[in-house]
Amino acid sequence: MPMTQYIVFTADVQTVQAAKLRNALVQASNARNDICLIISSGGGNVFEGLSLASFMKTLPVQIITHNIGQIDSIASVIFAAGSKRYASAQASFLFHGVSMHYEHQDFIESQLQEQYIQVKRLRENIASAFASYTGLSIADTQALMVSGATILSAQEALSKAIIHEIRDAAVPAGSQVVAIGNG
Image (cartoon, rainbow, N blue to C red; front, side, top):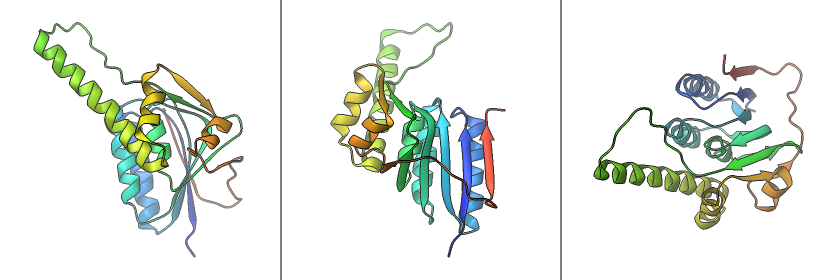
């Protein structure tokens, strides 16, 4: 019977933190351990989030995700990649459109159009991945994102079948735990 590796990810989805999470997932999978990803994240880099979620779906082990606080933005796709998804009673889920940050940049009209197409593609990729992982329709997922910031409580996430159950996270005594934070 496989053991369960507990990974606690309380970090932003950025390059360094994503690499640490990917490494922890690989180590658990190589040991043939199922994974319980206990997560609370404010989101971050869309590319990293989509890549991590897709990678999680390729692993030959069961991955359970558990929201212990907040799942914001691209972290929702990572969370949704779990085959079983749980949330603590006080947990929340934030959805919004994609933003791009430009500092001291000038654009001509065609470049602005290209940037718009890229942002739209990212939003569509997020919605498509989230919908395919959770079973929520793409239209319903896009509605959560396009209407501005939408925050769902754990109960609302349960009613939309984003999560399977509301329950507290618990790491059994003696379990192996890997913790990944912003530091």
